[in-house]
Length: 325
Ligand SMILES: Cc1cc2nc3c(=O)[nH]c(=O)nc-3n(C[C@H](O)[C@H](O)[C@H](O)COP(=O)(O)OP(=O)(O)OC[C@H]3O[C@@H](n4cnc5c(N)ncnc54)[C@H](O)[C@@H]3O)c2cc1C
Picture 1 (cartoon, helix red, strand yellow):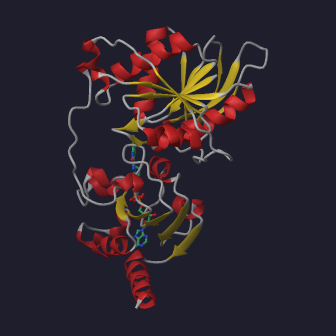
Picture 2 (tube, rainbow, N blue to C red; picture 1 turned 180 degrees about the horizontal axis):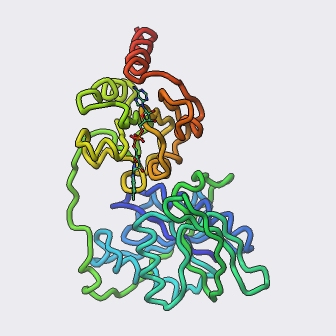
Picture 3 (spheres, rainbow, N blue to C red; picture 1 turned 30 degrees about the vertical axis):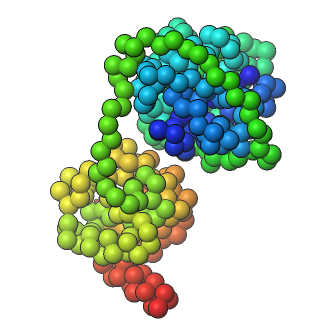
């Protein structure tokens, strides 16, 4: 079987886990093996049901004091122990920071190679070798790789594919796995969470209104805030903006900022440098507003308006108000 590791945060399944289940289901079908899942630090019926909705036929749960909250060492050893006992044909996690860290822990503990951020995985078809394409630098570089391993350990590229439930859900067999974990594994564990903001967050916002250097000042973001508020979204920005001190770093989209996945990203006054683009490209739709028809963001967007954002944003806001009235 192929073992997918289910990333969750205190019982809330992460999108990376759904992506791993989707990728794992396709891979398991190619290999002619069933898809099973590892659920670490929780035995929640809803998580199990969701794994079944994505086609997992069995879910192995491991709980205990060391797994009271997320910790890479505890999770890594728990998954490694499942692999020692179950001997899957391959194991796969989502390519999030946590997924990659856990799989790296597993690889070190089992002395096996691991390939991170894979977007196209071809299992061994008799040559003794797996092949895959990997995302590097947030997807701005694609790398073809070959892997010789008796048990491939992989993560799937984050947001490289849309999570898709199986055509017909299954009711997974649940197997509680008693695993003794050394208390010292709990030395790196999430102990607390600080809520920095209420409401919708930048990584999960359905609408992001992005502002770049073209916005011109901190005060000039007010119309973007108003439009984002009306659409239930968030304001994001480029690094030129954070460098100027107009917005906090937590608003920055890009390679050294946040990767966003909204239904629509309205990018205004942003040139679309590659470092910004890698954080924006998973948006389902992009509308660019820019005075430069040659700007990279304009060229790559689904739609573009060649106009001054200081006129365009209030005009969009007014039109929405008029239609809602
Ligand atoms: C290692 C490294 C990491 C980086 N990480 C990031 C990152 O995470 N995120 C990020 O964003 N950048 C990042 N950068 C910076 C990146 O290379 C660009 O410098 C930056 O994204 C440019 O920001 P900008 O598009 O706002 O500014 P500019 O490139 O100056 O573009 C401004 C745009 O506004 C348009 N404009 C001007 N006035 C108006 C107007 N009135 N109406 C409409 N349009 C107008 C212009 O035509 C232009 O296209 C990184 C760079 C490096 C080297």
